[in-house]
Image 1 (tube, rainbow, N blue to C red):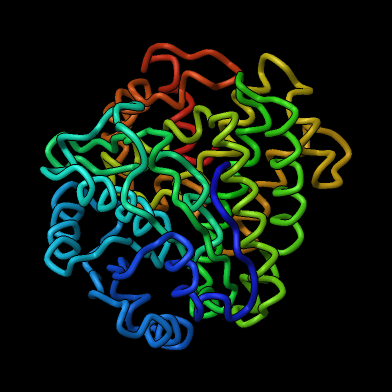
Image 2 (cartoon, rainbow, N blue to C red; image 1 turned 180 degrees about the horizontal axis):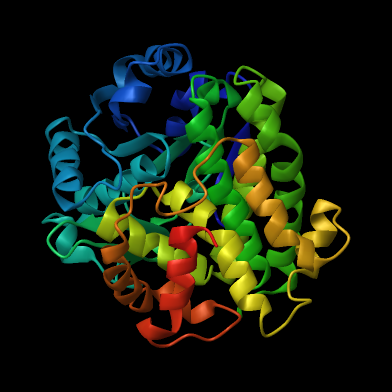
Length: 371
């Protein structure tokens, strides 16, 4: 976790100082339409950058792909930017990572997809997350949508860790309750899967346990009270810790399925994780009923057997859909989702080994119907 962390209410108004520390003079701000028009903290950020603002690229969409990244990189180059500032959720931050790569190396982001193939540091990248979900501000992966193949693909490289993450709870107060809920459940999924990945270790366990404590206590408060800065701050830290946990331990089958659902059926990532997680936990527990005892410890439950029910109750409490059917996924798409999940690297780290799409079809049907 080589990312410098800055935390505090109003910290986003002084990003220019972080640029100076990185030796940068001109920035491209990367965001989406919702954040760019929300006012408040975003406007404060723009004012604070002053003459160091080379432009605002607001073309990021849900699970943005190659074309969006290339367009953003061209805008950055035309503006003479030597720094990328991402302000948004996971899609925005991953787009910013891609732009920093293309700005440094030229060509298209398609030319640089792979695992640890980049030579040296990329264009300096400062991140201001506007959701408490992905933890992408402290990860070395960018998930990029390939519209031709209807697949989410990973750019995984130690050289794409952002340089600085500014955690300012003021950037979250305009987040709608439904997005607070779904992105928050993404962070919960990161923590739970990191705790039970085959790559788990004492460091990742420590981060994941504290992330669960924070998300379990404060996510419902942030959902119910959007302007509660204490709740927003605690969930920002919880999401950050969960991102650090899975960066060092990886995730599992729930994420593999969620990536498949995002690519095939365009289900938002946090919602897909929220729907799938309790069912995947029960699937994994068939081989080890005590598997989730650490989750129970972090959440104050009696035993790990109660953990899947806690996840489901949390989703219901925040009024999220709890079946793929309710999320608008066609039952006929499940076979393609299974194929996509089994080609996703996250499946390799699941505590219960799975190898073939047929092995998870009964699970997917259960997730679809909510049985």
